[in-house]
Length: 67
Image (tube, rainbow, N blue to C red; front, side, top):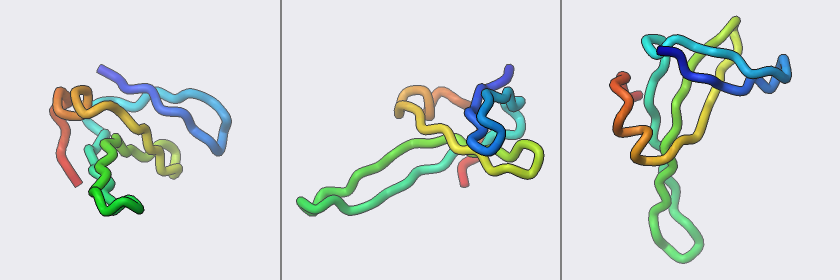
């Protein structure tokens, strides 16, 4: 299975095999003091780092290593 990312450098969509994708959580503290968590997928394609933000359900359903 392949996952589609948008490559900003080449301005085109690229497909990356699921085996080359890593899961990442980005956490930050909002102004009101609550912790905000964003779920993302990361990959490298032709030397370009790619990031795709996804829903928590999609993130948990994917069987990929977590960074």
